[in-house]
Picture 1 (cartoon, helix red, strand yellow):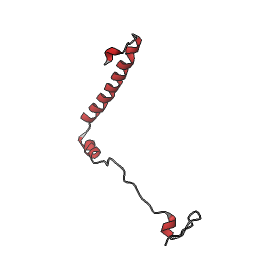
Picture 2 (cartoon, one colour):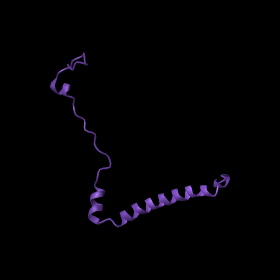
Picture 3 (cartoon, one colour):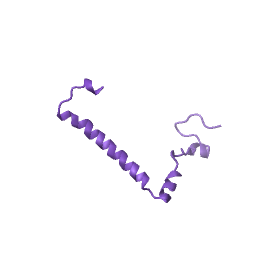
Picture 4 (tube, helix red, strand yellow):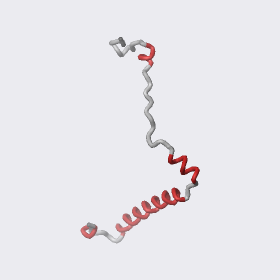
Amino acid sequence: MFSRIAWEDWQILFPIIAFTLIFLGFLFFVLRAVFMKGKKADRMSRLPLEEEEKQQPSRQRENGKAGKNNPNPPA
């Protein structure tokens, strides 16, 4: 695939730099996970992946009053 691209000599630096940065970032996170203490790894494994959405009723419904913008009061 890359043989069809005509690279200038200086342009080959961009893919090399990008690959190196991505590889170093990946290596950083792998080493951080490998050398993580057991207590911290256990705590991290129990963290929720998604936050629960909190649904709070509006004050109008809570008090049973209709707002100025709502012409139809709750029944």
